[in-house]
Image 1: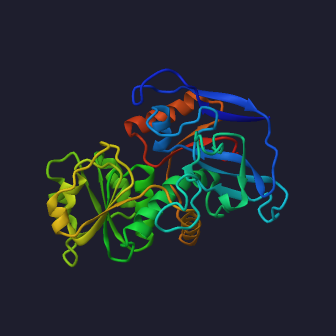
Image 2: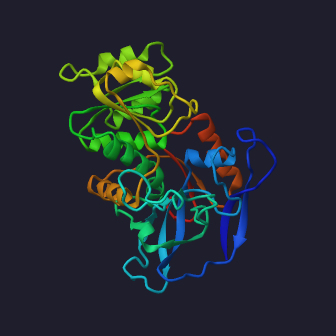
Length: 357
């Protein structure tokens, strides 16, 4: 038998409802051609999962397991599969239906992020996950299983935002990452530092800014401070006193706040809007030739490139807190509460059975 964690449907309006968690016993999957059976050892939460529970995410399934991030061991291979991954630790690619197109998914009708999706039954909050061979990559040896589970969705989104979209992931470029402490923001910080960028951060928590500086950020400002952009201007180096790119997951007034700081032709790359579902785009940004770019997840090719880079540079995703046991619903609810109020610095992880202390 296998267990899977889903959300229970109850009445309520989007944004007002909060679906409870429920654990099911399910038959152990049977493999088809080209499929692998992965024993999940650890899975991690994303903001997407909170939005699922609040019915703020489209295409929800109440029968498919939650969560997009996971790391496990291949314990069985189906017909027409190579045996090279058998008994190996692997990281699950969190998206389906997007192979390699640099612009967008090849077929929007096939694209989805896994986890409580009505398009794909996959989801990492379960004991056994069936995947196609191209949908996993071998886990870098330097990562613990818990760290590996923390990488997929935030790492992929951060890679696409910084490397693919911003066009500024180069040594000496000034990158602003807003809302440090969240998973994507921390991945952009780590990736940017590894690529030689000068990374600056914002947060409402001085301790989070201090931790980011210890991780390699050049400095940071409190976004609750009036005219924080002027404080940020003072931090920029004399030889390059402007931002090359802003990587933002909040939305709100980020365009108005950063237009003066950005170079002509600079980039604002938005991967989320946690403040509000709309943003203002003002004429000063147009006159300065600033590009507003959208980013949500990425392709399998980008995921493979991310994992290779993480291995090459020995990057370790930040884990904020771990709850042990897929059946620990109270503890898992606590992880969701951390995310609701923004307590976390890094990823929130469920240790399904990693045996790691």
